[in-house]
Length: 112
Length: 114
Image (cartoon, rainbow over all chains, first blue to last red; front, side, top):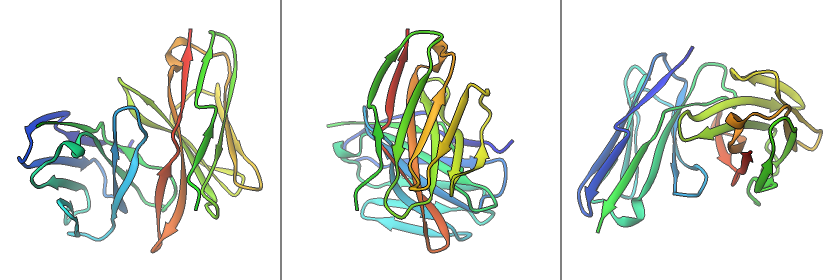
């Protein structure tokens, strides 16, 4: 079945350093969504990427969708302590339904 | 708009019992998906309901079931609880944005099976 792999599993950075998490799907995706989950919280929707090669920015966060629509990345510039949490990518296959296959997540720790 | 609500937020059950969890989606959203989150397995898709019909199903045993009502509210049921069913159960409400679904999660129900 469809699988979504996400690396790294953990990342510890010093405040001000950059951070990147990568996501790879075993199959072509119709779109990919990114979520952030704070400790003790629930996943919060960040963004959806639909088009091949798409790049979207939200302040210090940059999201990319690969040309083959099988991989994606999230890059945070100059991390802050408020960025702490687990970042998940979630792929949607064909059929445009409410079924998402989640990556294992990358947990980001930021040292002040 | 109000967000996704789930009840109860916390639940403690013993092995062999059954449990019913409830989810109210965002107003206007017709798709409700359920996920199980555990430290070891991450977020795993259980099933999706759309207009009272199960549209997708994950790889969980038949002890896990769900339904959706005409007002889009959804319930999931787990029968004959096992210790391994201890998890955070998340409900996600989906709405179409630009032709694609975006999912918004509720706060979850933390189920502990003893």
